[in-house]
Each structure stands twice: as C-alpha cells, then as structure tokens.
Amino acid sequence: MSESRGSGQPAPSRIEAGDDEWLVQVGASAAAASGTPVDLLGEFLPMLAQAAIHGRRPEARELDAVRELGQRAARQGIGAGQTVGLYLSAAWRLWRELPMVVRSRDREKVRDAAEAVLRVLDDAVAVLVESHQSARRDMIRHEEALRREFVDDLLRGDADISRMVERAEPFGLDLGKPHHVALAVPPEGELQIDRAATFLERVIVDQFGDRDVLVATKDNRVVVLVPATSPTTTAPAIQVGRIIRKELSRMRGSGGWRVATGRSFPGAYGVARSYEEAREALQLAVRLHLDADVVDGRALLVYRVLGRDQAAIVDLVREVLEPLHHIRGGPEVLLTTLQEYFNAGEVATETAKRLHVSVRTVTYRLAKITHLTGYSPAQPDQRFALHAAVLGARLLDWPRLSLPPRT
Image (cartoon, rainbow, N blue to C red):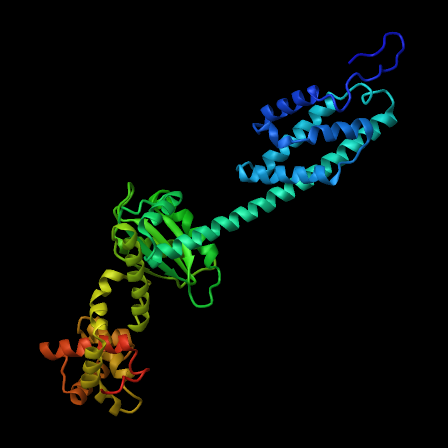
C-alpha cells in the first residue's frame, strides 16, 4: 500500500475485503498475542473489513456464527475475558493494517469507516459474551446435576461398584481407600446451606488437601467426605467433626450447627456405611436430648444395639418405667432426673447443678423413682436395668409417644 507520487492523493486500494491474506496475518498476530486459538475468530475479521471498506453491517447468520464461537470457547475452557481480548486485539490490529482507501485524509470517510467497525465490534462482542455466559451456565448446571447424582448414588450405596469407581475419578476420589463421612446440620431456620458448603469446602481442602475430599449438600445438610488418613492428618472422626464445627461457627451470621461423624470404612460401600452411621447418630442425638455440638457415631453404638431389638426395649421400658406415670405431671421430670444422674456419673451434686435444682430435690426424686419402680440406682444390677430403660425410653421417644400395645 503506497500513495501516488506527486498527486498527494491516496492510490486506489490494491487490497479488497475479499483478499484475505492480510486478514490471516492479522488474526494470527492477535491469536499469538492473546494465547487463544485463531479459529475462534471465525469470519470476524472479514466482517470488520467489509464494514470499514463498504460500510456493511453483519448479517444474522454471521452473528449466529459468532454465537457458536462463544459457545465453543466456553466448552474449551477459555474464559470470556480472554475471548473478548482476542476480538479486541484483532480489531485494533486490523484497523492499523486497513487499506489506504480507508486510511485517507478524508476525515468524513475515516469517521464513517471507524463507526462501521465499532458497530460490528459492538454487535459481535455482545453476541460473543452472551453465548459464552449461556454456555457456561449450561455446563455448570450439567456438572452440578452430575455431582448431585454421584453424591446420591455414593451415599445410597446400591450403585454398580465398578461404575462408581469410574465416576469418582473426576472428583479426585479413590474409593479403594477408607473414608469418614461427617454431616453438618444447620440451626433451625438457617437457609444458607449452599453458602455454608462453599465456605466449608475451602476449609476442608486447606486441612486435608484436594484429593479424596468431597463437600456437598443433601437433605438440607452439608455432607463432608474426608480420607481416614492423609498427608497432613490422621485425625479420627471426632476430630474431623470438631474441625468442621469450629469452622462453621466462624462463618458470619452462623451458629448452632450440629455435626455428626461416622467411622471410616474402605470402599464405595464403606462411604455409604459411614454416612448411614453419621445420619443415625444425628437422629439418636435428638432422641436422647444430647446437647453436644459434635456427635461421634462410634460413641453411640450401644444405643444402636438397644434399638435393634425394639420388642425387647419396649418390654423393658414398660416394666421398669411405666409406673412413673402415676405421679402428677407425668414421668418426664423423673425420667430427665434419672438420665442426668447417669450422665453425671451418678453424683447427686453434679446432677443438681445440671438440672439447676437443689441436691435435696435430686435425692428426693431418686427415692421416688425407687419407690415407684422397685429399681434403685444405688444397686448395681438394678442400676443397669434403670439406665438401659432410660436409654430405651429416649430411643422410643417415650413418654411423648405411647408404647405399642401388648401383643
């Protein structure tokens, strides 16, 4: 491109918009500078050249092609900012290399060419960004759906093992190793379960690394999967639970979380088993009126044993504790006193402190229990029967719920 000597006027352009050798060079230069594949430009540069030289606006089909390129960039994992950067870089490089017919001394012609180029750039970038964001949203929804489905199948424990092992790989899980499952339950009325999961995921990765860990939500609970051993910790389940509870309590506007942990077991079925143990520990904590913020499933194994023979535990509660119904107000006060007495190591002064009553009141109630039931907490054999009956009553949610009828 050169001006005619002596005329002072630009020579007719020897490069038309259809002669794309120079456009290829512009595109290659922009792609190299932005580190982005040149094929994401598609026919963008010819559109710009046509606009600059002939003032032509892009057709619908051409913008549809740009829309597809935005989706392609999203699928390839190329960010919207990087893709837009490619288009902007290509635009200014093209303007710098435009034929002399456009780069003339005629200000009106230059202004018209610039406006035409900017209109095309504006249209193309708007379509590019919208399609990229739409594609990313679709991909995120798809990934979230796959994640939810995987978590559901993993915790249910009835999916095909070999298939589960394959599906676990993208999540960085080796299902041949033992894992703990912990469940975090928000305080009543807390709706920020997803925010808590996002917050906790960062903490878990920092504590245990980014392999063999998983944080998800299920049934309005945060589910945390961590390896039984890791390069940074050999913490048993209860310590994992304490870490989770401590971090959740730090989250702004959050409090009153309860965490339950299951023991570690190997394999895909082991994950489901640990999850079930943690889930049952939460249920037992509610039934037994435990005030602990962290509940260890291992510590509640005895209650699971009691609960498995419901017929026997119903008979025990009926024969030992049903006489407490004869006092005014029902058996709840005496039942609570007895439970706190056992929790306090059978020390009346500690029991009184926990119940916020006098020691005399505690001893009176214990004597009343012995009188009504015929079982004394001071006698070893009778104490065990009373303790087992109290635990059984809490498991059955008695006396709030009536015992099943005799058969």
